[in-house]
Length: 414
Image (cartoon, rainbow, N blue to C red; front, side, top):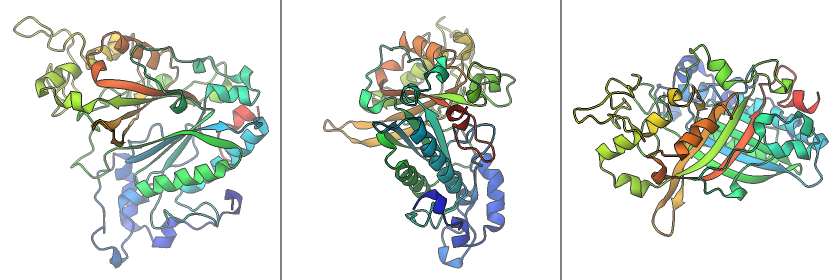
């Protein structure tokens, strides 16, 4: 059964009224999900959904969902290649199906009578489904003239150990939610709706801390235990929009309101990292591990004093510290909005964890965002010996669909 035959029954209706707890969740979820799980200890009482479950993110808007929202607890990244012989016609039908399914899923509704029922007891849980196009998509659909120059291949970096089978792809889908079953349900629905038009090229699973796990909203930590994301550009900054989203009037009007996603699977060599003494770890990063504050003092949000020296005359933040090299002021103002997931794919035969970061960086132009920063990191970042870039992708993510539109319509039907 396809989305065109859907049954319009909300998962929330199957459980009962959302009630006051759900209404509160719309605020707390947007602020970072500091709420606790209401009624979790007594499910037989028929209480309303917890705030984590009731929070919904609109599918339609100026930008696709999944870019500006707070980090989600569970994520799936999946790339597809169009099937042999499939072209623009099949791509149009596919994006129609995917958009219809995503709109139902993000509203907390099942996808057709054949819905698996995996998420029947849950609300939307801040589910987002984000779609992008790789450079090869334009060759497959005869739209090379509409391929943005921003999709030109990323340069090679010395730290790259890229697996081509887990890199790139015609189409890319990012799924995020604050509940693992809701995220898995969306993944299965998207895969099934692909039908014969596209096949999975690669798929990766990620996670973050669950909303409510900390006493108050705070910047996430990565698997090295470091506070990660402090330097992200903020929506309150005057140049935020121009850094992250494509402005109107560009060479490719269909990308207005869109963004470019650089996706990298970065393996962390955790055994090597964890053998470093704490003080040495902090010098590699340039920040305190306890609270993310710069070594030059203050709190997490205090600006790093890159010129400060200690009593010995040496720089407090070493010249090869990660925080120094990646700072926008060290890269001509280059910045990107990082919205990653951690991953752990088991223990290898040698006993080392296959774990690290699914790095996702959003920017209006990768040549002004990711590329200059990564080039500089590649030349002397103290963190480089402890990480390995194993997969890579670059995708054009168009703006959000308007009423009656499907994602990518302005490209495919222009």
